[in-house]
Image (cartoon, rainbow, N blue to C red; front, side, top):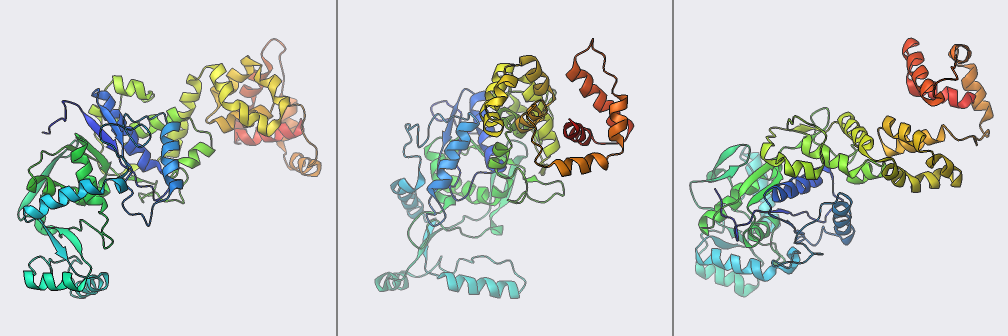
Length: 450
């Protein structure tokens, strides 16, 4: 199906530093890492920054930060180095020029002198005629004399890839053989007006040069795959396996956006979700596994990449993520759990919290009831005896408006032979259920009464 470079399986994560990484980006990174490690191969980080107008060091640093937070460590990359350096596309121009020359020699690249304004005008006319707006090879057969005239005049141009006729195909991990009719595609730009190389071309060249054996990326790249497949064909290079990951959507089936909680990984970091839980969730969604809770090392040893069969779109379910996060919090040792909540607890409550953090029995109970670390820290506040009465009027109003407050206290028949915390927790659960109330409301009122 594909040829391994130096008999090695190689995958890559190739983000563009043009925005903060989001859940879709991170899922691609995690699954690419999973593929490489399952096959005792190599995972490469490559930065696709050829469009310098959109890239920023702020976003680049965020890519490094998030991969490190998730413990997804590349074998090769900008920080690690490696035999394929440089791993920054803006520093690989000579390599791309070499491949452009190969296409020119074979007759599969030509200069296009159309300006952006002219192309826009052509597209508008096509739309008016009910035709799909695309480039129709206006410059592909320009005669040599006219081309030389334009060059002498200094007329700007870009290089375009001349698509061969017929069809091309790739092998997809889930979909099998994907066949593309190239008559449905337009000749794609290889360079921009400023001479820099486009994402599509640089991406193809780097995958060849770095010996990538499996290209893992989102479903939205399938049209790019058709063009790149044709490039493999005309240069007679063996193709990698492809895996087009399904689009992640919200509960309404719409593509996740910046407005959706969790779209940005920073949302989840701010809410103190565990990195282990996020990795677990992003591998799990879209596929069915017998055991749903697993670490990245367990996923590798059980070869879960081999079992992944994601079709269509995938719903981003925060309730499922919360459940997985809760299971991972339960997995933590008490000491590890304390270490993870200590700094933020001190920041919120001050040194008064240290005595509670030393009560390992209490901390273990809190750990096993928490859906997130932030919730754990909130629970700690229930056990402090230094409650402020600054909002005394508000507290009295809440108690007055809560008809069940007195009944609650009257029904609270504590037995000294049992654990107070466990008794209270179970009593509140039963009381809330009997009175058709949310447990958190009962806890809130009880806390204010106390």
